[in-house]
Amino acid sequence: MLLFVFENRADLRAKLRNLASAFVTSAAKQQQQQSALATGACNEMFGNLALSAAGYRKLAWSEDALKSAFTHIHYNETWFLDGMRARYRVWGEPEQARLEDFYQTTTVDGYLLLACADRDILDQATTVAKNALGAFCRQVHEERGQLIKRNGEEYEPFGFRDAIAKPTVITGANRTPHEARTLLFRDRLAPSNNCFGTFVVYGKLEQDVSGFWQAAGDLGTKLGWSANYAAARIIGRDENGTALVNDFSQDPQGTVCPFQAHIRKVNPQFSSAGHPIVVPLYRRGTPYQTDNTTGLLFLSMQENIGVQFGRLMRTWVNSADFPVSGTGTDSLVGRPGGVQNWDGILHDVGRHVTFRGGEFFFLPSLAFFHSLDG
Ligand code: HEM
Image (cartoon, rainbow, N blue to C red; front, side, top):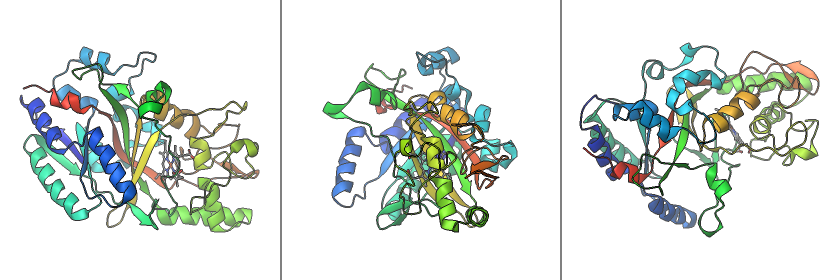
């Protein structure tokens, strides 16, 4: 992931158009890559390019043009235009000081995301991309992710299977407007009415692996559980990905899968009144590892940042009284500083995930990039 800050120069639009032509993978090509992956290996490069509101401003769109391009018809939603700096507390962080230096001091204009199953091919493409970006950006910051795979399945750094639950977008003949509507937003700066993009939330989430397992051990000691079972209660799935409960209507009191378990907080399935509720987020976390830190490069895609990611984080993850009074916040990623209810015992497992930086982006259509003049 190459996060960049534009130089102030007149030919930015043309430079960006050329960058997109060289690196962005079209939807048609992505479908071919998916089919190839389904039947075997695919060593082709994948690339996509997104812009923050700050980036659009440097490309010389007026504030009025941006407002009409990115305001939702039914919601006066300004999360994207405001940028993440204005909303970092949504991650449950009490102080901005915990951001990494780069994110603390820099407003990012966009990112180029490159991926490939073959590390050598990816490294070569990254070098070429950095040179290309260097010609019109004053800063290029690299985040390197690497999937953790065991028996072909993906795991996150605490050791739990990841990338299991995902909302499905039904495409082609079976497409329903409802499903597409939770992901796609019309790209109003593109040359035709038939172009769509999506909003992206990016967060660098550092994980304290030994702190997490220590906390799971302490919880287990208090409740008479093994550390692994306590950890499964914190997540809502065991390390192999088996859910404690698949259908939460079968566990209305939260006795098997606690209400504060991560997967139950982010997808409770039912309101406290028993009505089905769903907030679709198309999410993907890619593990990163440096000499002394590890965590996830978290990305979620949605049609509306405030109503999807924002609502989920504010009213579910970080709300101590959702879905019932005294639940506590999400025991994996919720706001720290409270207790959770573990079978009637109030105990704080602490937070072992720290938000270290991020931004809101719009991932425009390829047609938008191709139409850039200058
Ligand atoms: C480092 C931080 C995080 C870790 C280690 C983590 C870990 C996990 C794991 C192990 C699962 C279960 C596997 C799966 O269903 O794919 C999961 C599910 C999920 N997580 Fe996270 N997660 C993190 C941050 C977040 C954040 C910030 C969000 C906020 C929106 C989030 C949203 C979700 C959602 C929506 C699911 C699927 C729930 C379901 O439908 O069952 N995660 N996460």
